[in-house]
Image: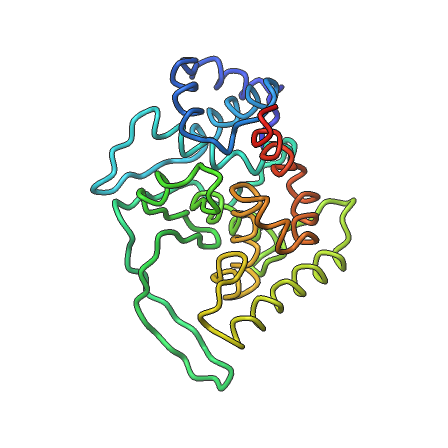
Length: 263
């Protein structure tokens, strides 16, 4: 993220104060933020202000953006970075484009025999290397709960993945993480999902079967679950949860369990 001690950051925060009542309304719409400490909450709010200053939100037809909506999106975008320090993790893009509904996107794929297939796919989000993030506004509005769905986190996980080049399910790891461990754990879970779906395409997998599309989608979907359904992820693939915990340096499961216990 950004260094909050820098003069430019302090000036940006001073010039863009957030009404506490506005932040309270946003927090009430985002159960996945419940359980954050007061210090984490303050840091997240400051990060949202800096994010909205750095990124341009382009609202297309059917999207009405007010201050609460902008902050609602920014809080979900910044949650994964909460404990990642002052690096600019969301580099390489400056714009988030918001569609009023799912959108049609041209797709291209070359199969194992070298034949190239083209089709139009209906998507709710996309993230392109060195390009903008595209989100369908209904998907953004449906995100924020402990419900195994978060479009914002999913697409921005792709941007973290792309920090190493093309999205391949391998974001830049911290020095205290082992690349071999990450690769082994993620590949084993990815292969397990594909074995299940190969045996029965209609099987109900423990997490969204879209994760089995490719390693990039596996990382994005499991990141989504990490923050929005950590209990489901840790039950299905505890080692994947452990790797994501080491990467994001957070433990949403602890917060969810404390909330469930009423503590």
